[in-house]
Length: 228
Image 1 (tube, rainbow, N blue to C red):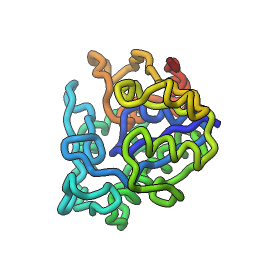
Image 2 (image 1 turned 30 degrees about the vertical axis):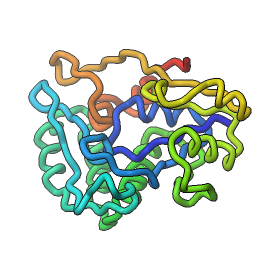
Image 3 (image 1 turned 120 degrees about the horizontal axis):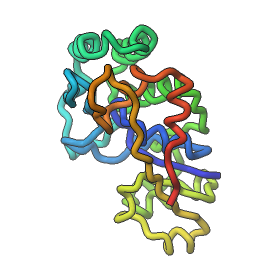
């Protein structure tokens, strides 16, 4: 069984969902520390042919808190930005309803808010791995880093752990092999698509991918990666 474990991100980029596409089971890593300036509550959208940062407001967020201990603030301005930036996108009418559903949640817990978001987008993209929440698993929460990942893999009887390519500095193939696990990293291809007849801006939120591509086109984009 192929497994991936990732912190929940705010409308993450295509590579995040390619990772989910590559595995049989996915763990929402909600019981690790919130990182200020990371992707847990912000991402980039397209605005006038360039990148614009959108940020999910949080209340009393701190690196001393776990993601599942942080609360969400008001996010109504994000919808206004999206209407302005993507109103002319070919799939705006369908995709906007999904985003509106996500941003209209009454859920204030950041981890649960993002978990709902990820599940809804995965449903639209026809991604349906086994779904787990890290904090609900039976594991030693005193462990950190690679040791905690290995414990989760054993808990879920994984044979193959797949991570984003940025994890190459964090995980050791020999250590995984000694624990009976194959370790791979996903390497997304450099993919482009039409964005209102302007020069392509890469690595934006999944919002951008969905706004400019049909579900069939999204399915093809999700397959654009290698495992190394």
